[in-house]
Figure (cartoon, each protein chain N blue to C red):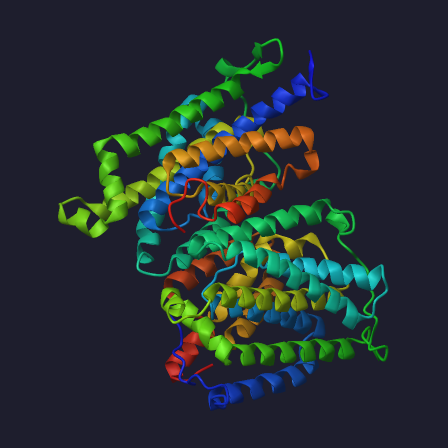
Amino acid sequence: MFEIFGIPSQALFGQLLLGLINGSFYALLSLGLAVIFGMLNIINFSHGAQYMMGAFVAFLGMQYLGIDYWWSLIVAPIVVGLSGVIIERLFLQRLYKLDHLYGLLLTFGLALIIQGVFRNYYGSSGLPYRVPPLLQGGQNLGFMFLPNYRAWVIVFSLVICLATWFVIERTKLGSYLRAATENPTLVRAFGINVPRMITLTYGFGVGLAALAGVMAAPIYNVNPQMGADLIIVVFAVVVIGGMGSIMGAIVTGFALGVIEGLTKVFFPEASNTVIFVIMAIVLLIRPAGLFGRGA
Amino acid sequence: MEQVKHTAGISPVVLAPRSEVTAFAIMVALLIIAPSFIYPMFLMKALCFALFACAFNLLIGYVGLLSFGHALFFGWASYVSAYTAKIWGLPPELAIFAGVIIAAGLGLVVGLLAIRRQGIYFSMITLALAQMMYFFALQARFTGGEDGIQAVPRGRFLGVLDLSNQTNMYFFVVAIFLGSFLLIYRIINSPFGEVLKAVRENEARAISLGYKTDRYKLAAFVLSATLAGLAGGTKAIVFQLASLTDVHWSMSGEVILMTLVGGLGTVFGPVIGAFVIVAMENYLAQFGQWVTVIQGVIFVACVLLFRRGIIGEIANALKIKL
């Protein structure tokens, strides 16, 4: 045990770790928002509610169907992604010709509905979700204690983020996607089914949120409101990073998580607000965002 | 955005269309007789929210800017009015004025930051800054944290009129509401208001015509924030309470809902919308959490089927301006 700037290393690295974990959720969520915004031109306000749904699918699956954590990592994104496909087909596709604001308002309404329904049945106190047996315990690294589960969350979300980046930036499917973002009419003329691609993109973005929800369940408990405040922080992350770049969203997400964690150590009163303050500063210096293109 | 087309022309001396004058007369008459039939507390609550929604509508309806953080101005004005009235012992008019000044100052800062980005980003920035100020309100000592500021004295207006009398309080609120309503009407029909509408319709075009649109947007933002502050300050005096509910993002959502239900960009829409939503919340309070769900359903229904809102639909059906 040693000290850095008068802070015990245990506390410092513990908060850094928690910051990295929050950062990986920010990265996964802002990645989903950016992908959805790219294709649909809609800011998905229900993203936080869908993150919460992911956690609930894991919790309910465990409770009633005996689906363990590992299967939940696959099942929850599929279930929530399918619900997203239905939402896109039923509602969102009617809005593409309208002002962007209507998409925001509609998904805000959906978030109220989803969160309200879950709160009615499960209250607002957290429901516990156990860490899977394989990842219980932790490693003593000498300067800190590293719980296995937390290490797993960071590594796994990094892998998912990089895989998403790879698919979008380096594969043929991704090139269709980017082309359709630039010019949907032209891509349609080449015989590619753009409306289906839009639907699947929304399902995928929402599935990423659900995956983050499953990973969050053992750390933060399962709670109908768990995504409500988180989504506002993620909006700030998106404003800071700009939605133009996939890698930008990932880097910004992790970096802001770490900054938030450090603030918790050195200036705890500001830990809730530090990301918003950074957003204000970025707006003053680089209005388009760190990785943004244009306004 | 779908809007009612303006026929009044550019000149500010054009008289208001007869439909609007008639509707205004009916509204004033209803407000005068209403306390004989309806609880004054309900009416005052609805009027405070009507003013809040009108202030919000000034921005979304006439400049096309969707602020998702208007609870910031409403709630902080309400805290400052409650604090100055209770702790400093200011009379109600000065307490409300203090709240209005704070709202204007916050509006200037938030506006300067938010208008640096357009469209969807504008909404996200206002929401994020409002959330930041929510956390300040949660942590600051003077706001009373979870308890809020309770038992705020209503005091005497100008040292004469005792506002603890419900009728006096009611007509004080009616006067503030009608005064602000006329002010907003005057703003949207002034040359300044015409430029705002030009920014809403086509910002690039307005810039090419030589207008410094950022300044117009900022001015509209500050005006909207100031009037939202007036609504918040008045509400703190009426209910003798300022609490975290008023600064929370769900309050920003509610004012959007009221304006959307009544009709974006209509003069009377926000007033009707506020009365509808406040009445709904009163009657549905027994259903507890379902109120949120119902609000969500109304949001979805309005956006999909009913984008003109109540007043917008009526005006469209009768081919008049409201």
